Amino acid sequence: MIATSYKQILVQNLLPSACEIRLDEFIFIQNNNQKHTVRLVEEYFDENNIDVLEWPPQSPNLNPIESILTYIKCRLANIGKLKKSN
Image (tube, rainbow, N blue to C red):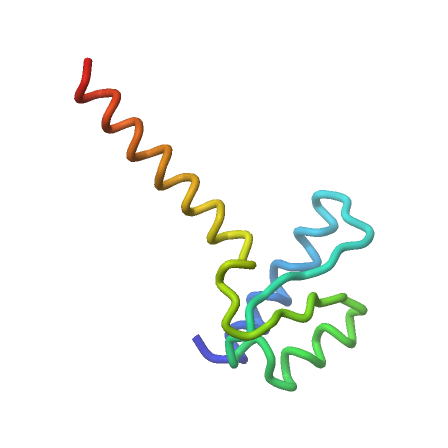
């Protein structure tokens, strides 16, 4: 995905989704992928007064989605074990 595509996804989804769930204020979290930090995307955040959490580079242990995915994988693995033992 390139930065223009990423920006288009943000334009189409970020603020409309925030409005839909009635978020007046929020901090957007993204990693330091190059497409996330280019001027085009940063200008979108600035123009729309969107606060973005500054993310330390090379820090997957701080990524909330990684924790969730690990939890889901463990739960799914346990479901398989429960079915086999019955």
